[in-house]
Length: 445
Image (cartoon, rainbow, N blue to C red):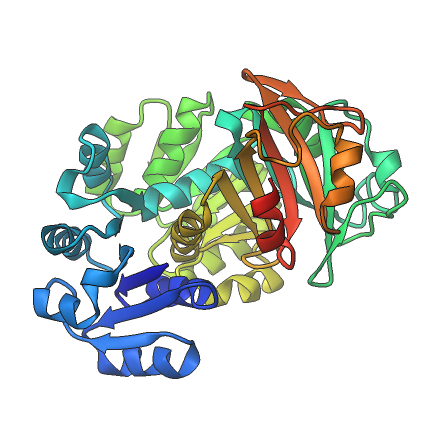
């Protein structure tokens, strides 16, 4: 595939790095230093110029391009890029936006703005956060098969009942499959005899109910579900969407916003959220409002450093789990090392969404594990699939090592995959695959 990426910022650079090995990638940016740096860092072609200009797009070879990804930091620029591309070529267009109003307009009218696919930074980040709230110890949660299946990644602490158990001992759930263990940066396929060590990350695939039950077994002292008390620090667009989505799920969160006018506006828009006007770094305020009793504190301020400070203060006061927005993707590992439980990078979430969109092919859905360690794919079984009409234990012999069938849905009914389960044409199958074998597995399925 020939892909033109307009915008060589963090998102554009992340997408370029992700696609460079498998596709012909051209990156367009007004900053010559950025395009030159990408030329040297990755196997991509850099073009210096305005991505909204027909001349620049023609210089990038728009006539032969299959896909254009507009990923600058300006919503309007990205929309104009896509509109211009549609006027002069048949390339598939993807626009990254922050304002959800553009997303709503696009959703109401197919191909609005000349955009074939639109991703909203703020909404995606908020959805990523909300999926983790209500699941103790969860570090990542992705839905499949229209929400009937979940893939979740859990971190196992030393005091967890699951620590030092074998997978066979921990597997007490009818509709859950243990697929892998992340240990010391490596992926290990989960076998019955595999021992779950402290600090391991366990990846499971199953029904939402079974994933919830496993979360309780990992952290039995936490209070999962809508009983959790959630405090959101920062009334940014991400903070607003987190509160709104939590309200939709039955939560009654509290939100702290320092700006009085913004706080009043949020209070009007969020009927089931208690909005408090204050500086969230004011320790007296935090103590007076018993923030330390919260189960989860989500920090969505406009500064990585402020989000780190709020998270550390919350942890010191006794909050069970902290989730922080980290705008600089490179800081995520660092912040998690020094005390943030889960760091969410909006740019990283968007880059992953766009990158997986280019990878889908025949897959209905794709989730990336640790960015590049493994993938979870949802495929619809057709007549040519090696899974069709064969027991899983038989078809598994034709699959490479590093592949696990995690779940099956048939006519919207969940089926736990077992050795004698026979997938049928039309079934949706959720498969875990080590990154080294993904390219070999996808054509077989």
